[in-house]
Length: 485
Ligand SMILES: Cc1cc2nc3c(=O)[nH]c(=O)nc-3n(C[C@H](O)[C@H](O)[C@H](O)COP(=O)(O)OP(=O)(O)OC[C@H]3O[C@@H](n4cnc5c(N)ncnc54)[C@H](O)[C@@H]3O)c2cc1C
Ligand code: FES
Ligand code: FES
Image (cartoon, rainbow, N blue to C red; front, side, top):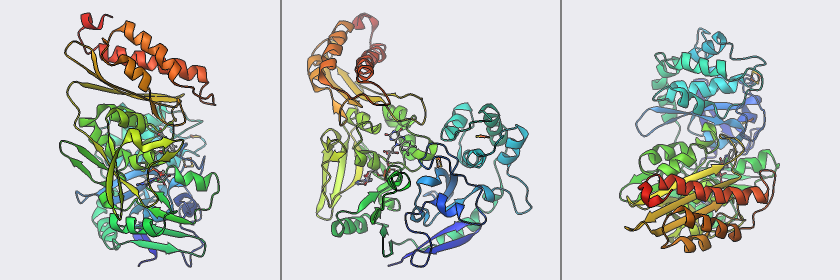
């Protein structure tokens, strides 16, 4: 089995053999670049995905045969994750004559930089926008920049630079050399890689079967997919991860199947999930659009959000509202379990030692079901939830509640449904008087904690008000006389 990783950098294939390299498999791409004589433009700000100073762009062969470019936070990406990809840094943007890229020129012309610390990260986010965006408008620009912090220049000139450069004919020397890049990417063998050093084993399988076999023989291995949770254990807590199973290269886990039910591979990056959700799952779409930043969503996955089983995991309440199911697979076979039964406690799930999450299945949603997702955080973008909710309502012909799901995150040690309040509302008319009564029930169901994000009292009030907001949002879609506003 191969022990080497290879990726395209500076127009050629770079190979790392961890036996002889001074880097380890959990060296981040940021650390690698900061040690590289020609790639010190990338900066370290926070080392936890919050500032974007370390943004680089990864190019990979897409199923349509083109190279797809994604901005990522290099401080959260372990070196083996770039195997088989093109790594593009700010040094690669000028052409061979030294002419700056359109986004670099625009940043100069609009005075988009003062101290310059954040600038390489902004440039790389703008470059990804330049290469990938279907349309350039203020929403697309804001979305591309939410993962980048600037403390001195301010955003107006940077937004102006984005509009100025990306609105023109978007060709550059990167697109001109795409054929060569594809040749180089295809020259890297697509097969499993096992990196073993005296201190560490890091396995990068290509198929589900290889991943399951490894999990069976290494039950305590640390599974990673996007790594946006696990990388922090290394970069922030300085934990040594001795055995890692990295699912990011298993294409079968990144496939989406659209039928009556929608099946989303557990390793599908959230940016791709968002694209699918736009048509079919609007509540999931609204939640994912305020999930981390573009850089985070380009790596993070639903499998990882479920695997973390965080009490404030943003996808979990909305998955419950959609009545989604998790597919767990081992070498012995597979089983399906409803998301509401998947999580059993604080960061605990029913996933067995030899199992992996392979898919998330969304059943077809009835036309009569109204599903909404809400996130309460201190900032709209790039912030974790103080409280979140995924709610579903189905009314009968008399406007009585036929089916209701009220799933809350941030109110208990795990994402939890307000089953007492749901039971109270079942069969009742969906009118304000009943909602106000339900809000009093809700108050008794949870004993939230106080922490830096919000006090217990704040959480109780916010949870009650989310229920009221859900009523307002859904009552607006039923006749006013029935809603009795
Ligand atoms: C800057 C920043 C912002 C963030 N913002 C948000 C946010 O807004 N909302 C939010 O909910 N979270 C947020 N997160 C947390 C994180 O991005 C999410 O939890 C994400 O969904 C994790 O996915 P991942 O693929 O990166 O997981 P990983 O880090 O790869 O894994 C997470 C956990 O899941 C397990 N796991 C992963 N895949 C599988 C699998 N296939 N089978 C079994 N177990 C598996 C891993 O062992 C690990 O315990 C943020 C993180 C950062 C760093
Ligand atoms: S250094 Fe701040 S996001 Fe990576
Ligand atoms: S130019 Fe100084 S932080 Fe942005």
